[in-house]
View (tube, rainbow, N blue to C red):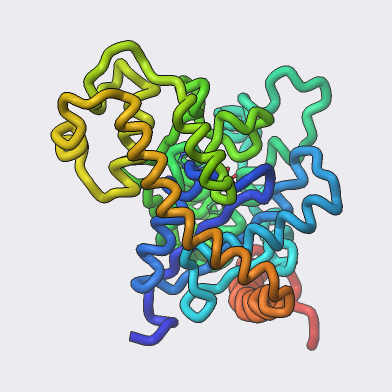
Length: 334
Ligand code: TYM
């Protein structure tokens, strides 16, 4: 089957903080596993990153580093289009159109907006309209499948609602996307505060396992991870700290919870943590060595992004022209 005939898969990550094992398990790992069956677009959403304060020079470096980490994790530029969001102006253009079919009430209900705007004096509009830009990212490429972690489910529902509303108002225009959320690992929790989500932009680096953490740091962080009282190694929702580590182990090893329980029966939390740390180190070792190779070849990264932008631009222009025609804009004479 040619690339064009496959259904479209699209996803993205906001370049803030440090890519972490939560992003890997909830999203990146699934992108890699699904990439052969789809026509793929993976975004580094630099425009979304503006909704939180950024140091310009660091943002620039981080954007390139994220592209390199996508590739190091197994995203193959020969099979997947990797795109820097700001390289394709149609994302912002489509967002403007979608703003007019999205309601304030819908955006006010977004839990991520509520969390991120809490305790802030001046909430910027970008933070509020963030999900509309995300809907534009998805709808621009007529996406069928969006692999994400559980925290993005509500944003995806909004994208579906906006697509359906636009289609009803202006006739069939957009594909209505389906989410892909993994059964295990859709919400990896913080190592030190297992009641909250592991977040790549957490200031406390002990809460996260970064993909680029050294083996020593990984071992130390897992050793110190908060576990609950008790001694049996098993998945149990009343024990969020331990269960979080068991989920990680399960996804990274491919073993079921039952197999893990059997493997560690009669052993201590400490033994389990040692094995988990070994597992994470082994998964990340090849990722880190590929990452170092890729980062040493800046020309390669630029080439990947140039090809990605060109491919995405052609596709995005097609959808946007269709949208402009449907809503009654006069086409410019070329
Ligand atoms: P972001 O950058 O916060 O997260 C990137 C991806 O990682 C997943 N994720 C997690 N999964 C499991 N456990 C966790 N602790 C965890 N933390 C993060 C997220 O669910 C996500 O899949 N708005 C999006 C980026 C975006 C996007 C898009 C995604 C912009 N446009 C279009 C899909 C399609 C975001 O901020 O994700």
